[in-house]
Length: 192
Image 1: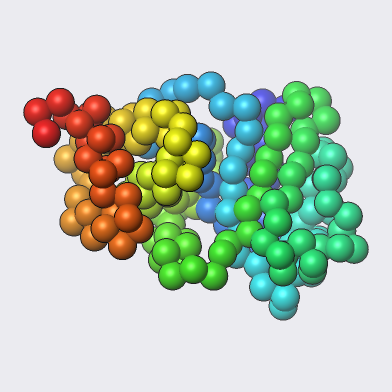
Image 2: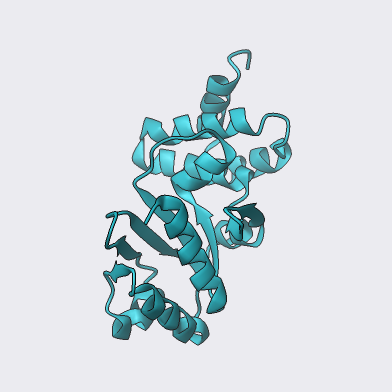
């Protein structure tokens, strides 16, 4: 399958089985910024012990196309420990990583602000561009990787004049990533 087909199959299957989700990571950067190669899809899942069966049913359906790297019987433990669930497309080798939504206030806020966008004749929930920037700032702080700052630059370029700068500034302060935000913004606008 192509990346577009994988995205459509996965998100439609999750929606059909009542699993709340949002696309994040490099595919969201491509959506809000500019195209770049990505070797996987990152999707955040909001799953509780009560909705574990919904996810289990969705994964059973997806296992027709993907190798699922999680034993479905151990799914409650995986969800409880917020471990990642990975799928591998059997034809293309493309990986899909499901991240379990954390309980931190920022994680809940980000998920609550997800945006439904039409893409590939499907409605797909994406992380907001502001929250994508903030998430990338947090990851940049943790990993010290320049890739995250480059992604932020791309989103700033693609969303020029559309971003809620006050929201970004407020959360950057709460998350202690203000200096990284300034660095990323200076890449996007050298006059800053």
